[in-house]
Length: 150
Image 1 (cartoon, rainbow, N blue to C red):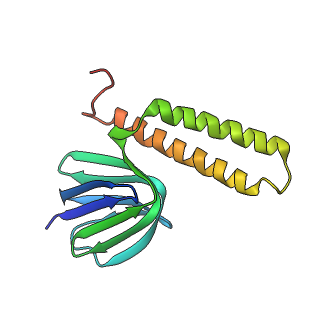
Image 2 (image 1 turned 45 degrees about the vertical axis):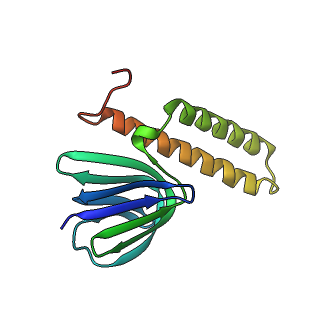
């Protein structure tokens, strides 16, 4: 029996997919591969790429933390943020990366302990933008993936 996967954020249902052969998820302690008839599982997700495969097709998502539950060939993912590779606006992600890098430079030059929270936010922003870019670029290079402008 194939897997059914539901990816949800606080803002929306990102995707519900049926007939999935394997899910690869960024667990907090490393990558997880979930196949049909997997034992029940509840785990924390890290920042990373979520991939599901069916036959020769593959779909990718940028996921920024959250939780995953596996039960009876149904996988529920409650993510802090999740975005399908084809939804990622590469120009916007590049701009976000540039802003985060600039903010980190400013905070490092300033120094001191007062900017720890600001530094953590800037690092998280940089990590999210790099993840989004990596997932989008991987999707563009994948065989059979649609090419920009055609």
